[in-house]
Length: 510
Image 1 (cartoon, rainbow, N blue to C red):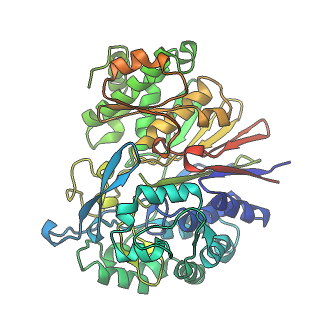
Image 2: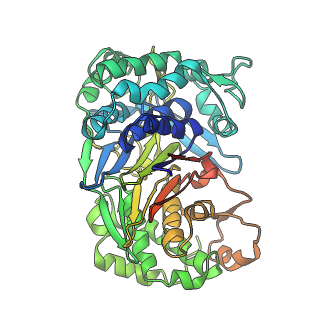
């Protein structure tokens, strides 16, 4: 009989958590083991040089969110002094611009989180928690088809610097990144993880690593050694909202992803979604309209996101707008775990696309969060000093009146909120099982364009596409639409699935 289930974006990520569980670790030991493994085996999507969030819900204790997302430096430098330049990621049918360089690096938080969460919730020694990740870094692992595809998407970004070419380049071809079937070994990263297990986060934030980062960032960067020394993991109360008799816990402000999901659910609760029929014209139009209005409300509420977006009067106004005719007009991964006692962990982490700079002797590619347009809606180089950047990441926990639990979250930049929203409504409104809820075709609205995953029948989309003339049709599932790796516990029975869009897997541990 399984006693725990874990879903993640790579088999070795999930297996790292499962290995720790089999050795007697708890859910949070497993989450940290999976986090560390993801930073080894999911390059581009995860790195110790990035940040993220953990929604932890230990049985019998108050749930809490560990915010270890990246933070802006204390001081900015003049633009003309920065190493900061644009490159494009190519999804095949669309491209997206990102900025990389040392001037794009924000203060990373993942290493701090490993030890803060372990101190509060862990039960195993840190060297045992990190052992699976160390093994994969030292012995190497085989690049799969998804990792090869992701490398192809970011080819221009990862061949732009000698650092990333040396770390991720193919040994057989110049200026080509590793392909499917090739092996990635990261001995420097293995050594670093071993040293972190012995010395703790101080090594990274106050020791020789921070000194090296601070020194190197003097050449075109903004991050300083003092920024690293002053970084702290923040513990927050989850944002809690009710939806059709269920309770959703999700990421609270200052991040915006959970808030926008809550706002969209508030809009949809006023609609008879189930009676419309799944993927019916009415269902798709209502869903798209909710996404469109969430975008509008985000702009109307401004940067003071929290209170205004959940204001009853503002929500009522947009519930009325959803009935009107509509106007014509990146790198993350996730881990979900739940055990038979109901202990749950929902963990999202990101490195952006990486800045191109690898900390010498560590194998750590630092983030490029200051170069992500999604995270800097007011424009680059306008961020307030010494503050958390907002994020779309929204690790979430849905609980029913019958005691059932569903743990979910997603990668995918601005698509995170729409991916999670659709999984939640599939679970609640259409009472789907986890696998069906995750694998069902998705839509996404952003900046005037509606993107639609096709499911073999385009005829039903006529009215929807007429309402949204700026649209893009995707012939099959794609990484663009996120990766909602999800697990659930209902009446003692586990369900779980990894999102196939991002190579997801699910492991049940006996």
